Length: 108
Length: 112
View 1 (cartoon, rainbow over the protein chains, first blue to last red):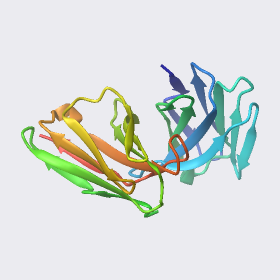
View 2: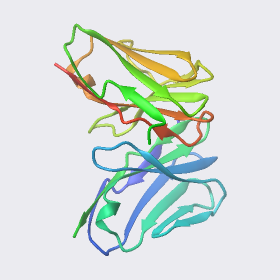
View 3: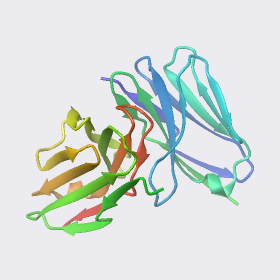
């Protein structure tokens, strides 16, 4: 079945540094979604990417969908302490599979 | 966000107990989901209901029994659980199956 791999598992950065998390699917995806879960909270939807090569931005967050629609990335520019949490990707094909998540911690 | 509510928020039960988790969505969505979240498997999809029919069951042990009486409510019936079932159980809903999901706050379950 479909597998979604996400790396890294953990990332610790100094405030102001950039951060990137990557997702790779074993199969071509119809779309990919990204979620953020704050410590003690529940996952909250960030964005959905549908088109091959699509790039979307939300303030300091940049989301990319690969040309082959099998990989995606989330990049945060100049991290802030409010960015802490776990970022999940979720790949959609015949079913929907979440990646294992990347836990981001930010040192002030 | 209060679109998806879950009760109870915390539950402690023994291995011989029977309990139920409840999820309610107020968003008019057609699909509802149960997830298990633990340190070992961060987000593990358990069941999916679309238009009140179960469309996905990911090899979940029979000690977990879902019920979807209508499109707004989803239950997870628990019986003879094991300590390794201790986890955060999250409910979610979406307009359509595989669409953007709205998560509830979760039930923190501890099995003694």
